[in-house]
Amino acid sequence: MISKFFKTRGVPCRYALLFVLLTALGFLVSGCSVVSSVKKGTNRVVRNFKSSDKNLSKKIGIALFEDAANLADKNYALDIQAGLATAIGEECPQLRIVRQGQKGYPGELSGIPKLVNGRVDILGLIAEGRKHGLDAIVDGRLLSIGSIEKKQGFLWFRDTTRFLQVRILVEVYDMETGAKLLDESFGREIEVDAMEATDLVKNAYGPAISDAVEEMLPVMGEKICDAISVRPWHGFVISTRGDKITISGGEQAGLKVGDELVLFSGAKTIEGAGGQQFMIPGHKSGKIRITTVFPEISEAILVKGEAAKEGDVVKTR
Image (cartoon, rainbow, N blue to C red; front, side, top):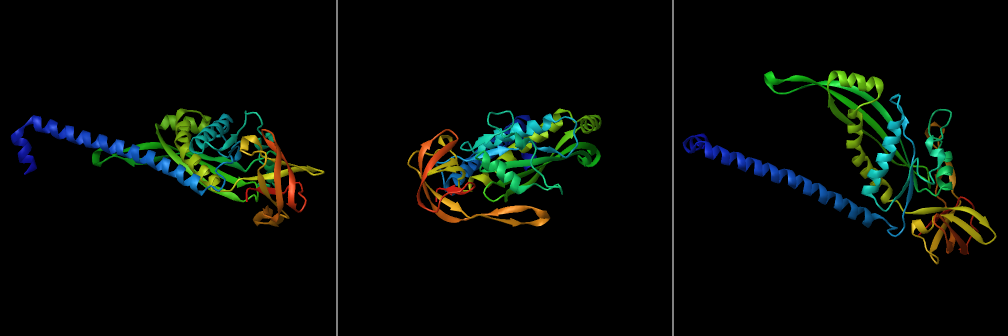
């Protein structure tokens, strides 16, 4: 019936049908874009709602990613680090991010401390993170780069297509306990020709690797942002002298003179699998009041409870 209708109406109707189909496709594409934008906006609202410390800014450090793919060019690790900082910042603009090349970046994060068995030295990582006032540390590895072939097309139009595969592991460590807030691998495939793929794997250069990484960065940034946003803000006692207590976190974190924070002490160390050690949060031991605020640190006095010790944790509640 439909084919008979268009045969009798001729070419103009076929053009009209084509116009309707293209218009519908345009609405579909724009609709997907709107849904994506609404989803991103909703995610930000949910993060803000879940966060118990909306007025305080967390500080995270991004370690230089390890090259487990054995690429010759270390710039890929730097590119991932820089791109990830941008992606996290776009998802969570309230986070303060430090990465290599920036002022105040801990040189120790250029190489995450490891145990003799190759596992991450959690206590060593916590010590470095707390010293620099970090709430969390992002680490990871460029796991692999390889190529595969796939049959694509329909019937006699089927052909062999080569794809470049890139996989990246992302880990986020909490500086209060050393526990992983995120441990996930991400992968992408980019279509390349056979000659290009071989050259990319051999020399570790080419637009395909960069394209794959660029596609993964927003997803990784969102996952990291979600993992860190729901955690409460915490600072650490850096030093004590007489009645003066110095803590990590200052004006840039959103602290003000007169703010009162809860003090937690008595944290214990436990041993996990592979000899890794973690920290168990301590008990509420007192309360401190901020007396002086600097950009990255603050000074406080004990209001009540036990005397503060270096390494104690401070929270808003």
